[in-house]
Image (cartoon, rainbow, N blue to C red; front, side, top):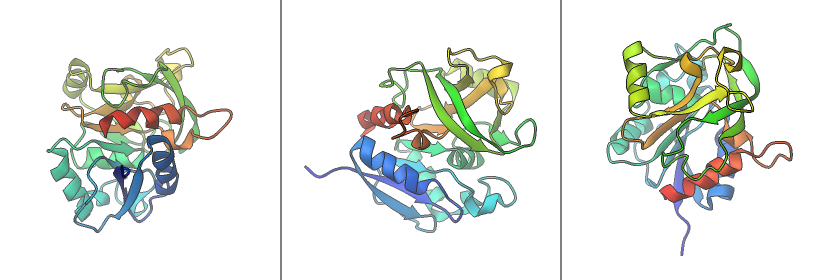
Length: 229
């Protein structure tokens, strides 16, 4: 039986697409198709990833110009059909910019680029993206200057009421206080879904936590996605 094929959108400035490509192929046991942002069609629709990086050099605002690409217009169309879509870091920014996810990713609270490993609490283990992850807290690298999640009080309540908050910055033991918040995100939010739970955005990089003796928590993330295919 041939392997299923997962699509990865690539923009000018993407720099995590190759790492993501390797992680998806190896730990989801699928083939991948790299889709250039100018392509108006996405032939492989089992699942779509939007990788991290600096699409269009983060000109104007992170992820803003990428929303004008033909491939993202196709992502929007396919999202309404229930296709699973995952945006990581810049991919999360793009998903908020094109309004597939609520909120915005703004400058970190100290206005500095952050690059380090961070503990991430799985806040909602009942989504199709997280239900097969055995751990309650994972360790993923973060690398961003505009990663502070922000939304209005009304939208925050809606995210909480609909169980759309999936990941939170935390301590090794799952504490989610101010001291465990690396970028100032509201309520320590590191990742959310849409209301229909078929779109996930997260700032941390699971594809950078595979095949390392010290940290391979990304493996459980990607293996857990196999149930969506």
